[in-house]
Image (tube, rainbow, N blue to C red; front, top):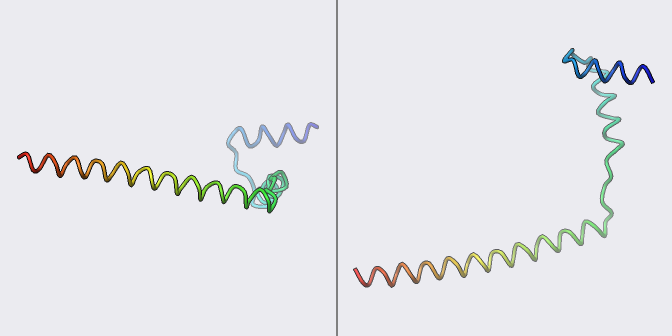
Length: 77
C-alpha cells in the first residue's frame, strides 16, 4: 500500500520516471481498456454512417437554399 502511495507522489511531484517504470505504467493502463465487442462496433459504425448521410443531406439543402437566395439577389442588382 505504501509503495503505491510513494509511486503516485513520485509522479505527482514531477520527478522523472525511468523507461522501465513508464513501460510498466503503460501496460497497467492498457489492461484497464475495455474494448467494444464486434456487434457494438458494427452498430456504432452503422449509426455513424446514417448520421453522416443525414447531415450531408441537411447541409446540401442549406447550401442549395443559400445558393438560390444569392442567385435571386444577384438578379435584383
